[in-house]
Length: 134
Image 1 (tube, rainbow, N blue to C red):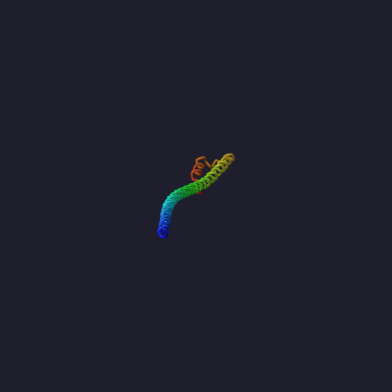
Image 2 (image 1 turned 90 degrees about the vertical axis):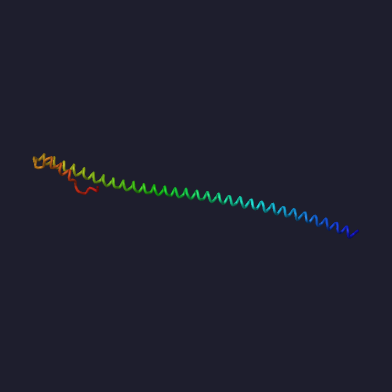
């Protein structure tokens, strides 16, 4: 009976070991499933991060394009302002010359020198000075 009793204990030990192995296998499968779920979640987060990065890059590119447009508009405005200043200076010079001619004509008439008629003054005014930038 000692041999049979020993055989029964061995069977119980083997059965306990088999159950522990089965439980360990189940735990491993569970851990594997959790790891796969974590991998999928990480992959989804990576994809979402990539999409966000792509959107940020699009917004950055659009902002850069807006800056280029604004810089071009600023350059055009500065050029127009510079041309306007040049034209203003030219017109100011014309006004000063016309005033000088008018004063000279008035002085000539005041001295009795009627050789210069008002139509001559108008013709001179129409001719300009030839240095118009336009």
